[in-house]
Image (tube, rainbow, N blue to C red; front, side, top):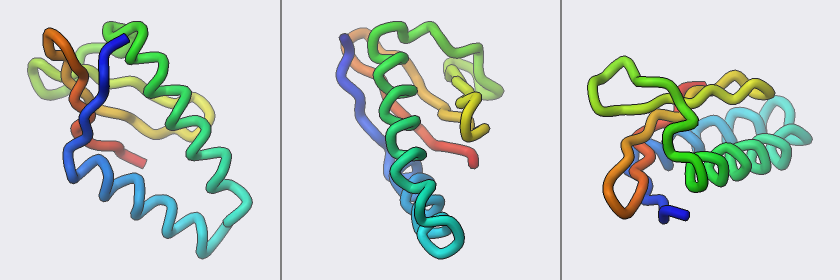
Length: 86
C-alpha cells in the first residue's frame, strides 16, 4: 500500500466542500468524509484504478456516490493527490 501525500489545493477543495455542506446539509458531511476515505484507500491498494487524467501523467477517479473527481499522480513509492473537483 502506497502512502498518500496531499497538495494544499486538494485539502482546500475538501475543506471548502465540507464548509458548504455544513451550511446546507450538515448530515451529509460524515458520508462525504467516509466516501473520500474509501476512494483514497482504493487508490492506495490499486493505484491504476483511475483513468488517465486530462493532464498528462495524472490519473482521475470518480466517486459514484458524490460525483467528485479526485486527481492524483502515482510515484514509485507514494501517491500524490493534487485536487478534488466537486
